[in-house]
Each structure stands twice: as structure tokens, then as C-alpha cells.
Image 1: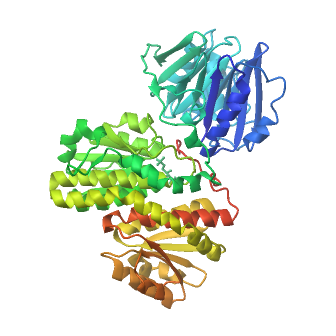
Image 2 (image 1 turned 90 degrees about the horizontal axis):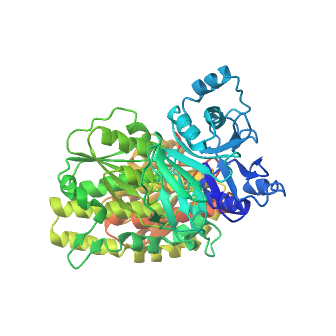
Length: 608
Ligand code: F6R
């Protein structure tokens, strides 16, 4: 989704801005633009398509500036054209803004501006905001920004400059992330830490309705009413190496292969095998309330929602607390019943997904205990929830979520153990479970050896346009996740189903053109899953089974078998999902798709 980078300092701004945009390019965009203050005025360049097209427009006129802003746009209001690309200027042409989010009342504001004789050149809500700020400008940019934002409804992360105040950037946010990087005699303001990390590790996270004003003399922060707000300077968790490919062709591949290590980091210090207990420091302040909770609502979108479904199984099985997993986008709007003793658990890699944020606010407003399971440190969901657990799996750059999924499941598995022990699990059973959980990174490392086999299978089926994924019980969410991975990066249609549902309609689809991936590890549901394989085979379908090492029987009925190590049934998703991630990855590569930046998708969905 849209990206913002702004720079004020002693170095040349344009290369820093372009480098910053490239760091954000994983978030998805369709046009880009840059503005600098130079020669007493603004110089603007915009282009449609990749950042490289914008770079070609950076001529001598723009070079050498010390203050500027840049933006990648993911179209919401108006087509992805040069005219709609940011930055947008006010009527004087001396003020410019870049903006992420949506100004919901832009039509009303536009009508008002038109009555003042101010007309628009683009179809964007952002231009309306730029013109409104310009309309209120009386020589002080922060006053004008604050006044315009007080009139605006919706979400924004903005940065603004004015040629009459050439040594100042004003930034503000509500609902869209914005971070101020504090360097040595310079500031880098960005919507994502990835654009800041190579310059400084010192950052200020702006909260909703806060405004930052940076000048060579320093920075100050206020609210929208101009009351000063004290802010901490925090240390970034990111390192530059985490943002590099490290020898892999794509971030998705790097992130799939990072999973043994990312899960070790995720679980480090949280599983105490000596005392057989789970230590989740982020929940200490709410532990009593959480232990006594009567019901847990897990809410999330996409892959994180699949992790929530796994969590539902784990928590119900180990802690016997009733759970429901809800799409955040549905939950937030349907006036859900949240009675006393309900805990709402918001799961999000980015911590910025607008629906998940709104769902957690719905929980908060109705009096629930609201917890976050989030990867991005300092993100909005992490800051707005009562307490929570960070994934600590490192930045996820590939648009298709992989290591965040296993991190989310691992955190939910630890949470289930934590609650289970306090409800009814014996010390011995918890110890056994935790020992197995702590051993999962090794099992994943072993599972990664399936990479070549996954490539061959993907090559075999690369021209099939429809795939089915079947799973039962705790493997059902893995079927959903496998199908989502395939469709989002290879554009192959794929459907995930609880295996028994196949008989109720989808079985009509089975043919030799339709690969069917069946999750059939040993356990509770094994015989029934084998039954499903037989049903598919007898209708001419071609089966790729994911089974437990040592299960030689299954080779006789499935065309391909991907063997995963034996792990306790409840932890099975952490290993069975790995070959499905690799299958999707290779299918996308073989089809020539842009794996890390699939069409129409953005890494963080910060608009509805
Ligand atoms: C799929 C994917 C998305 C996200 C979803 C939620 O690979 O990445 O489905 O899982 O958009 O995003 P977060 O976890 O950032 O809230």
C-alpha cells in the first residue's frame, strides 16, 4: 500500500528519497512521485509504474535539494495516472503534501473549496487535502496542517512542505503509520521503518492525531489542537541485513528458509523447559483477567485469520476455553455480542491492517480485554491493544506471508500452553507439549529439504488452472493457507476445504486436470483423509499428499507424497504448511510471476 518518505538534513535529498521508496516497494504501488524545495520554489516529478520510471525524470533541476518528500501510490480514488500521483499541491503551487489513507469527507471539503474558487486537477482525495491546507495557510505550515486535519474525516499519514518555510517538514497521522527517524543533523520521515533503517535506528512512532514538526533546529510534536506532546525516541528492531535478499532470488524464498531461525527467535525465552512453563512477558499485566476469560474471539484477515483458526483448535483443546475466529472485516461491522469476560485477540503481521484495527477497537469499545499478536513493533495495533505478544520473526518483505504465519501459530501455541496449564493441563502433559514445540524449528529445517521435490511437483502441474486443498481438523486451516498462497502469487485458482465438505459439491470438479493437495499426516483424522484420497483417485483426480515420514502405504494411492517429520498432531500445521509454501513459490516462479509483488496486492492493507 502507499509509501511515504520525507527527508530534511544536510545531505542531498533525492537519492535518499528514491532509495527509501525502493525499500518500500514491497508494499505494492502503481505510481510514484517526488517533490523538493529548490531555488525558492517546489520541483515536482511524477510517473506511472515502477520507481525506475520516476528516477529517469530526476534531472539537474531536482538535484542538490536538502529537503524533499516522495511517495508511492496504490490507487484508491482515481486511476493510477501521473495526474493522480502524489505529491499534490495547493492552489498557490508552493505547498505540497504526500498522503497515505483516505479522506472520507473529501467531497464535502471539495465543494467548500470550490465555493472559494479553488478547483481540482486530479480525482484524488489527497489533492483536496492539499488545497484545504493551502487555503488555511497564513505563514505557518503546522497551523494550517492542524486546522485542515481537524476538518478531515478518515485516515491519513501525511507529510507537508511549503516553499515559504524551506527548512521545515510537517507530518501527521491518524490510522496510517508514520515514523520519524532521528539521525545526525537529519530527519527521515517514513510510513515504514524499512525506509529509515539504513540511516538511523532512533525513531519516534507518531500516535493517532499527532503532528511532528521537524526543522534543522530539532523536532517537536503536538496534537491537532497544538498542545505539545512528549515523545520517546525508540530503538528500531530492524537491521539492514534483514532487508536484503541474502543470496535468495526472492524475499519469499528467503523468508520460507528463515523459518527455523525466525521461530527460534519467536520462542526464545518464552518456553522454560526447566520449570515447564510459558513466559509471555507482554501478558503479565493482564494475566489474571486473561486466565479467567470465558470466551476468546480471534480476529484477523487473510493468512493471519488462518493462523487464528489454528489457534482456536489449540486453545480449545488445551485450555478448554470457547473460541471463535472471525474475519475482522465482518466482525467490525456486525455489532457482535461481546459479554463480560470476553477476550478479543487481534492477529496481524503488519499491525496496521485497517479491518483488524477496527475489530480490536470494536472489542475495546464493548469492554473486552483486547490483546494483540503482532509482528511490527510499535505498530498501531500493538500500541492500541491492552497487552500482547510480539512475533519477533523479523521484517516480512514478501507480500505473501510465510514466516509470520508460522510465528503467529507458534505464539498461539505458546498461549494455548500458558492458558492450558492454568485451566486443566497437567504439569507432565504441558512439559511434553512444550518440549515438542521447542523442537519444531529443527523439524522445519528438515522439512525444507522438500524444496526440490516441491519444484518438480510444481513443474508437473504448472499448467493446471484449478487446484483443490483438503484438510481435516487442525489441518483444515492449513488447506486454506496452502490455497491462498498459491492463488495470490501464481494467479492459479485454488480452493481450500474441510475434506469432508468435498462430497457436498466440489467433488463435481474432480478431473485429471485438477491437482488435489490432501493434508494427511498421521493422527486422529488420518483414516478419513485417506478415504478422501481414494475418492479423488477413483474419479480420476491427481493427488499430492502431505504425509508423515514412514507412512509407506500412502504412496500406493497418492501420485506424489511430500513427507514431513512426525510431530504431535496439534503442532502439525507448523510443518505441513512448509511444503505448501514451497509449492506455491515454485509454481509462481515457473509461471514467471512477480513473486514478491503479486499484482493488485499490497503488503499492508491500510484502507478498506
Ligand atoms: C497473504 C497475506 C494476507 C495478510 C492479510 C493480513 O499471504 O499476506 O492475507 O495475511 O492481509 O495482514 P496482516 O497480518 O498484516 O494484518
